[in-house]
Amino acid sequence: MKQGKLFVFSGPSATGKGTICRELLKDPDTWLSVSLTTRAPREGEEHGVHYYFVTREEYDRTVEEDGFLEHAEIYGNCYGTPKRYALEHMAAGEDVILEIEMQGALQIKKAYPEAVLIFVLPPSLKELQNRIRKRGSESEEQIAARMKTTLSEIELLPEYDYFLVNDDLDEAIATARSIMKAEHCKTAGTAQALIDKYKEER
Amino acid sequence: MKQGKLFVFSGPSATGKGTICRELLKDPDTWLSVSLTTRAPREGEEHGVHYYFVTREEYDRTVEEDGFLEHAEIYGNCYGTPKRYALEHMAAGEDVILEIEMQGALQIKKAYPEAVLIFVLPPSLKELQNRIRKRGSESEEQIAARMKTTLSEIELLPEYDYFLVNDDLDEAIATARSIMKAEHCKTAGTAQALIDKYKEER
Image (tube, rainbow over all chains, first blue to last red; front, side, top):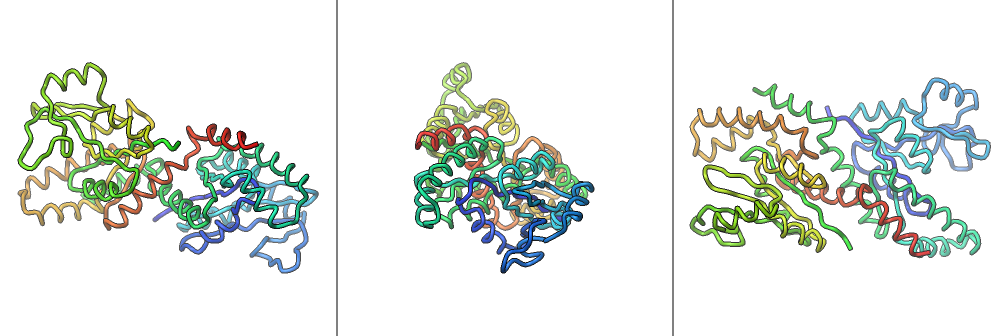
């Protein structure tokens, strides 16, 4: 039976990771991991859809049980990617998609080297600035600071397996699908099972 | 400028490598390597299309000049994949496609580790036998011997980067395209150039 793989989409903010992941989810045999968090649900957020809302005790217990693929405390709230669901869905043959900030992605790669890390890039910093300006929610100073952060994040590119330039959205989604398809054709880790399959036929 | 890559399609005979490669050639920026050979042209074979027909002296000189990606003598005739054309086309941004027997493919991987080796597999040995039987050109003994060879060739799968099961031809071609596309999104070897590109923008 086909074993699913873990695909981690990460990269600077405002590059369109979320949109790409939501599109990929429409494919069969694809599952999006939902994080645990200790923060309170915001309006419209549903338990099990946007997050699993848990108590600090439940979160701490999961940490102690080594139940996270990655976890972090951000501004006093805790977030984590539960290991069990991801492993179960992969064992059932589904590809697991994670959209996650960059430090979490690198944590996952350390704990789970078979994870495929995909860095979503803007076509250019200029284009990224334009996109953020159009939203109108940030000052020029904030945008300048954000570009600085983005550049330092891009320096982490060598830690990732693939880059994905989100210039044209449809093209980026097609490329993401190509990466996922190609990963399922790698001989690494599967060659012996394939050889055995043909041998058994004899 | 985009650098082309070398994609080597190999595997047991009668798996449809040639058909897949001919289809891939229809894509823009794709070039099929033509081998040098010392054997005489057969009817219908054109110089520069099917082979470059050369003298033994020219062939030996190319060997001495380290001008082959791989070369071999088979039944007294010499064959080789010229290095220069392949490298030129890659430098011009084209993907170079090679359809080659398995020992040649492994030679290339040794000399040129960046080459991407793709092993074309039959859906099953049974299906491969059916295909050969339909051609009607081989005896049952020959088919049995060929299956033995095929199995020993499949044992070389771990030396390859990818496997490609040629069950449905269109699906196999689409998967080959996905592999080629994904290879162009690998950070290995390109991350620093990408980082520099974004830095220069500042």
